Amino acid sequence: MNKMFLCALLLVFSVLAGCSFPNTSGVMVEKGRLFIEDPAFATNIEVVRDIREKTTEGFLHAQITVKNTNRTDYECQYRFEWIRGNGMKQTHAETPWRPVLLHGRETVEISAVSPLQGTEDFKLAMRRR
Image 1: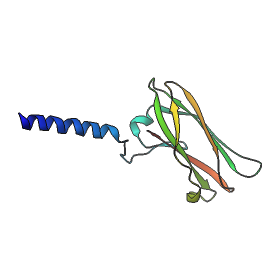
Image 2: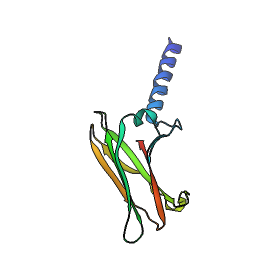
Image 3: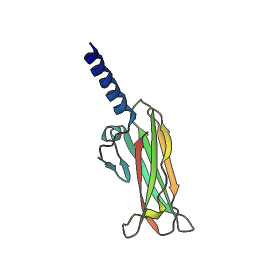
């Protein structure tokens, strides 16, 4: 009886531990300039529009419009990666993960301005919290 209880308890803790950590499968799904870490989450996100333009001061203004195609609300995080004209990522200009709430069937615009001049492109990484 004690062994069965111990096994059941171990199973419950294993399930709870698995639910508390984000998906870290290492698989990235690329949708244009949008990169999503979780392939299951990526099936529910659609890129409606992705634009970029230079400000008058020479900084890059980036904007991606994403749509949650599911009825479920998602608590997400996103961050921009800025890229030079030669294709190199500007590692000293990384932005922190920022929260965004995607309600079911909602369309959200995510935008930012690069912190450095000379930025030519961007990537937007998104993950579930």
